Image (cartoon, rainbow, N blue to C red; front, side, top):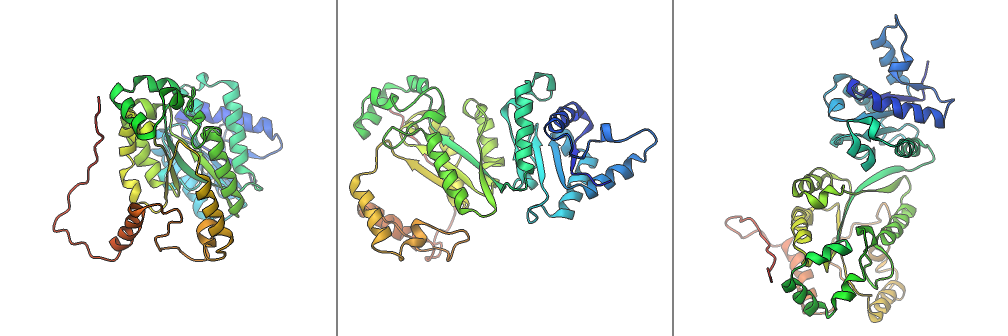
Length: 375
């Protein structure tokens, strides 16, 4: 018998796999699903049955945890499926990981479903609400959809603050921030709210969540077979520095693509500055996008300059302003369309020179950065 879906899990996670199987069966009752606890009968050659089901299934869902990581059977099932169907290349068969705990680093380019409500409840499945179970099952269904593009998981960190966190900024740092930007405390606080997703950069109108949605939609439209899926850290990223370090090391630095958005005003806060330093190595990663968003709208003159370069100078700057996927050509020249002063010119030339001039240092020292402590 050929199955449409195979659910792979470690014995210790059977309650979790059972809940997922039940909800997915409720959504699609007619689908042939192999869940060994229900699919095997007394007297069956269970090893042969499981192997046959794993070898013939169209899709596989792996319930991932430390138990699954150490299970020879789980490893055998999903690696066998991966080697047979090549899901990175084959758009008709999907391999989806539901992460209860940790993540399979070797499979990060495939669909990885992370829900905080699931992770925070593990290992007690009874703590998960019915709504959270339904949401998890729907996410899995979306991942299995053949009309859906394969996900491009993008670790995303927005280094900003909640509104009430500004209360802990010292007087000295407030003085420096106000002197640097010419803004009042009320003007700063007006750009923040109860969650980090509600920070309003640029002209203070659109929330960062809306900015990121627009970016994702624009990029998705340019991708033929992939779609962006933001992978954000848990709330513990902001309260526990070891958790923050682990996210940067295990997720951000190993992703196919990653995005770091820096709130320049929030960087005056010691907690945000401390986390920014964790991303030091990301500066040398070609697959990382680092953006520092200003707390003001782009001047009209610079907008006009960008439009002019894009329209009047077409097609010279086409690959810079609207890069295609895959690119027509790889841009390696240092290119800055909004060079505003001598420092910008020097920066571009120095970057270019660093790729040409041999390393003349006799010894390597560890670079360091410190934040001025105006307390």
